[in-house]
Image (cartoon, rainbow, N blue to C red; front, side):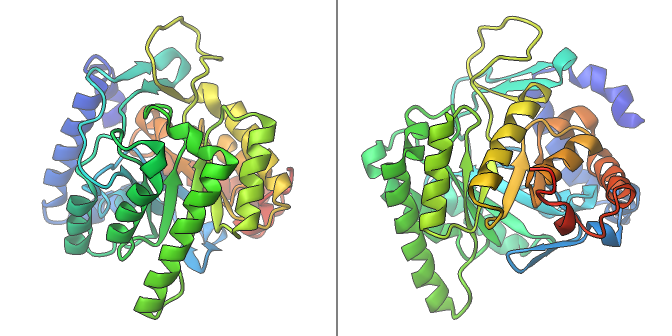
Length: 361
């Protein structure tokens, strides 16, 4: 109720300023005795049917927060208090970078959409690694999303990714290679088969070395793909994923398309939210079919309701992520989706999330 009252005021302010303000206030509130327990009591929906296991990681529910919301791992310990079953931080680059000039984020409330051209603004891998070391584990699986510095040419992208990956490897439960953001010039070219083959091969080699040194199993490595790929390009990504026995794929990032937006805009950047829903689901389903369900998939893009979540799971997603849906839905979003998802699973006769994955792909 408080969020519904405050949202009209928030939506008159610059989106980035609101995000920064909410972050600061959430951090302050978390230090009040009993506040975090109160948040958990208010925003959690616990149900055995929602518990799932992917990559030998235990998830209390399949609804996570997508990369981009907590770029620098500032909120990572607190986001599980809002009902999320896992947290993905980033995108993190090898060194700090400011991102693109402001303003660079725009709301379209009538369409429940956002356009952003943030450009991987973050504090850099050394600072994020130090923060994660100090914080410890957030209590839920932690994903780390990594990207390329804007000033690094694609010919040097492998070394750049390796720097970030090496620094952050001790702290993540899984890692995501972001080659699909539309806001770093040339980045999406790394989704091409030759580039992706070289990048994934190098990261897997480094992962093997670090896992051996730690005497532990290698941590899962995923690639996040764009919704704007052609069918042939999607099939190339599937081929590389199969070749390297990739641990998973995330479908999808934001889109350059403006289809589904009810107003004309000249703002550049990637669009997220409800207009992306159908395309993100199509790409996910195609990947699921192409991999024959052998690779776990994370569905993201246009998930705002429990029905959206249920459809994405039946299309092939083992896990789900929210960003824009959380912005428009407020702090009860994860709870509302989890509650509705549990109801739908039972109504359709499923006994678990895993049983429903890909059932309508």
